[in-house]
Image 1 (cartoon, rainbow, N blue to C red):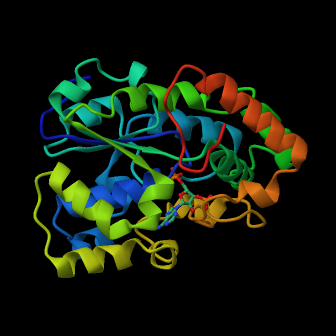
Image 2: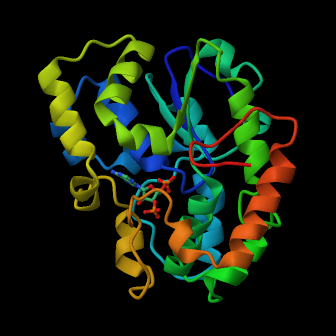
Image 3: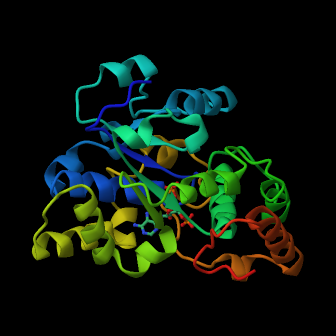
Length: 272
Ligand code: A3P
């Protein structure tokens, strides 16, 4: 597809904090336009490249009515600038000239928490009825949707010094959201006042986010499994420590050690 210099792309493996990053990026790029953001859902403000595929897949399995717009590739081509584009595809599947043409924000998260978050999400969508352990066994054998995760992150990590690339760890960002707002403003050539930074940090806080209808896809809330946790779920780092038994922790550790061999990629809370 044709990339435009004034596009802004947000990418990352599913359940790594993409939605949070999308709202952060959109708000910084639009100098904190909370009013518009409250009126237009995030899923409308961004074009989700695999939306068509993912939603067709979901609808073929169950009868949800997806109320947010699904952008076909024709619609993405025809959309006016500036376009905000979300994708979960790895860099190797994205246009080769992407980074040389426009800015990309990549969000990465500890794969063990990503696995738990994906498990809760597939339960919410009623796509999986097994337990966490059996799901993790698929996940750490690279058999989950959008897998394999580590090559996805490694490709982005290797591009982290490109001037058009901002690589963020979810764990680091949540420790100091105002700092990341400032970094992002520099990256996007925007100037925000101190007051805007405070307001945006509050807007992005987990509690506010959880109750923000504009960032929560309504069709998931409406027709998802009511016994499963929500789309904006817990927002915590390191939950795997409580939810993995010894065998699961060892399997994840082995998988990370093998897949990170020869790479200097290290997640903030990972020790080999
Ligand atoms: P958990 O399931 O661990 O809570 P994505 O947007 O890529 O699907 O990522 C979803 C994850 O980001 C979920 O993780 C979700 O709760 C978390 N998240 C969303 N908004 C957040 C916020 N404002 N602060 C912290 N975490 C947030």
